[in-house]
Image (cartoon, rainbow, N blue to C red):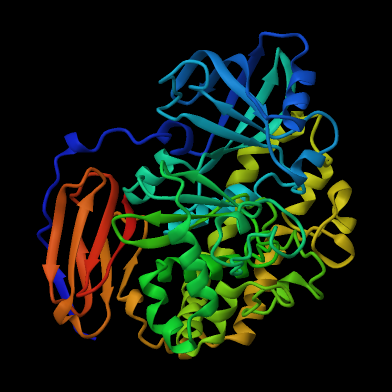
Length: 514
């Protein structure tokens, strides 16, 4: 494969790279101090009443202390949130903060909302955080996460994971497009029309309202979404293979699905048919997959799947449940080849003990004192310490996904899962059939010095442009094949988008310059 070296990147003015929303909250691993001051002594009953009813926010003041300093805001909105995580014992429930609910335009670190998750079914408190961190480094669309110690009216309430809201700010930061339709998969359990399985239920919007929630779109028009679902279910095998990349941002979806499999993240589309968003990117004309609510990674959610999660079949597609998008992908030789390639790439770069164990150790050291001080947590201090290195028998009070309901130890899970993968898939021999929408691979991400752009064959109708997050052109080239090494060491830090233009398609990939 011929390599070309470009050593003269276009310089971009640092003036265009303004602060990104949430950089102070999520840019550095830290523990925020969040002190909520409700205006009513009966705040807890109000929160519970609203959760069971209209889910309105109740007002409170809030003080947030971070590495960036102290911020005090009046009249923010607070409400309880979540489904199974509301089963956390005691009053340590997950909640959401809306900074501009009662004061228009009010924000914290330029953010409108933040989510606070309570560590349900996770003795280590890091399953969600480490998974989202890997997503960010692998270029998979997912929220950012950090940690917080929380008090309510001066009373210690617990140690929480702070998670970014999926909204227009997230979309603008992640993909540079925020004027399309954003659908959230519902949180229904069970089967049938109430689950977000992407099974076609007919042309009527009314048949989808129980399974999906339209979060963003002024017109409220579901027709494109329903047409996408119809294509997934009813396209011929040949059309599905050749045209799925004109409907769905394909390579990022395959990478996202592969990461779910490696981490045995089954409380997702794969098994529970929940915990994802679909966004219609109006620039690309493609649907994009966004992860959500990933607290039960490392095999913590099994829902009747037999056997050890460390030996979950690499092609597990939901089994007896209807999951037509994933099932048709994995049943197609070309798409399965591309999926296997993503498994191998993720295993090599991120899902291995050399990469994950130091990060797990660093997170444990960061949060250990805060977890120890949390008297309202679901598990004991001994469980916290043990579950990094060994299984927690019986899963503790929340149950688990392992044999007998045990919760897998994080480090042995990674070691055992990678060992299983290596017996099932010879990554040195994986051949990926050319899939049109996978015409560009970009790595590493984030990047500091050399960015590698790997192009498919037949470049005559292809061009590549790289833009800053504000739309300024940084670099472009036409009719490229092979692998390009692009020196970006002098580029300002920030978010960039590589846009590849074909004769009848347009797609982009986001990357971060450190």
